[in-house]
Image 1 (tube, protein in one colour):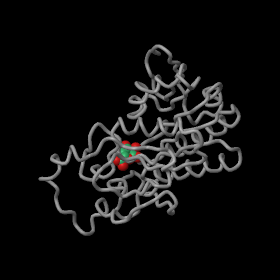
Image 2 (cartoon, protein in one colour):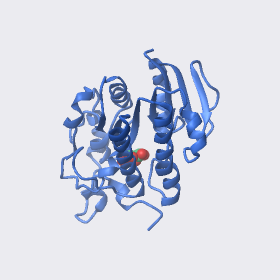
Image 3 (cartoon, protein in one colour):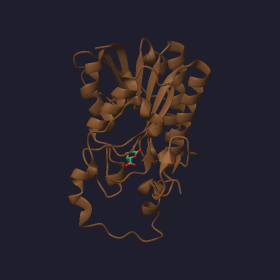
Image 4 (cartoon, protein in one colour):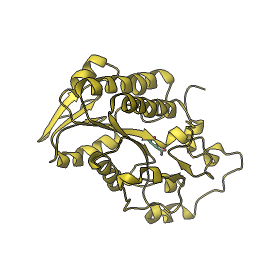
Length: 265
Ligand code: 15L
């Protein structure tokens, strides 16, 4: 267990629950936080219920931590106000605390929705201009830029993971392209945590799927090699894909349903 203390935020979320099972193998003290109740602490765990929008609480949460896996916040499109609290103010509170407490590295759950308005015909890499597909994607753009600033100014390292669709299996044809298996997600995070120098790195997160929208060569120093592929699920979609209408935005843009989502319009 080479890292003394890891903090996992959003430990009650979809991916947080998966990480909780595995990250304890890397650290002697796993601190878990969520706005929701996380139940009983297991061996080697410490539980802190915390609202990321509460700066004083976040400062306490981060104290004594070596590495943060930041998976907390809102993970889908929503009204601006809650996204602002959890994802924008929450991100500021986290890095303010990370700096004050001397944390060395953050692994940030960004999202492919920072580039969701690229057409599905384009191959996107980490240096191309951001094209968010909603307030959620915009909040992830803020997180990527904020972490860049904290690296440039204070040398705090961050790996921003532009996670595709990390579920047990793809749920629709789009996710055949964006699918990231849980095993590959864990391997990507392991690479992000243990690569000796990462500076500020942006990595896309997908498995070794047959179709791809993302060129991840700018993150090759992480050494991430996906072992899984959405290919094994191809039979679930092959027969029932309706040909998308030419004006179907959810088929034209990488963000899929996110480009028309949102209670705000
Ligand atoms: C995301 O960023 C969401 O957090 C997740 O729930 C999925 O919807 C995913 O993107 C996706 O694009 O499939």
